[in-house]
Length: 205
Image (cartoon, rainbow, N blue to C red; front, side, top):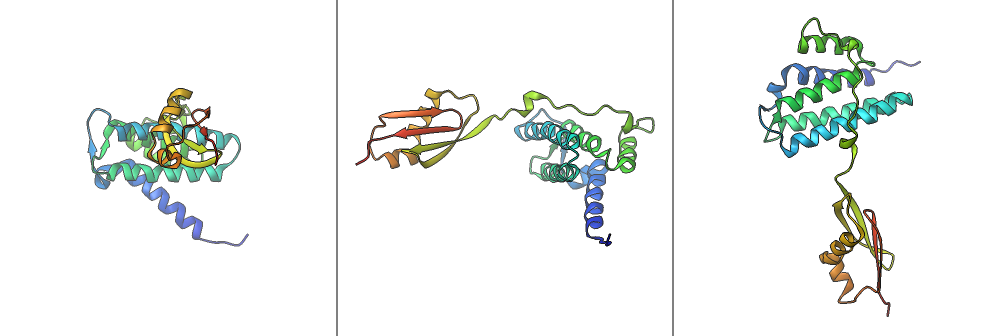
């Protein structure tokens, strides 16, 4: 095949960033020892979703999409470390270890070296178990609910994933955008399919 160095350059930059984050995260941003914050919990959720997504990609032999997800997760970790609140030490450690474990089949040598530098010479990444996602971390906390009036989209509202029909209807009717669109009209029927959709049926002139 024709040789191109574009992909090699991109892979080199990616692995250089992995190396730096694995061994010198304190030079990138702030590392804190603290109780978990909302930002830490979000990274933990992303970590488990990455495990689930990459595992499925590998099982389908979709290696290119797996690598894309790993690159995206690395970007998230850099933003996490460089954020004003910094990164929690334990959360970052778990995230980086997971990144290395998921990368190991594709980059066995560099991940083995990084693992031993992080965990001691006796530690071997290729003897570690494949990470398993926590199902509880894969559940969405909120869902974007579409609100229609007579079948036309009038608003989108973030709602709890477990919201019921009554709660969905109440949130819709409380929405300023829906109140303005109704212009005082009272729905004669409410078709609720929580948490995805609510359609308010009003008399048409």
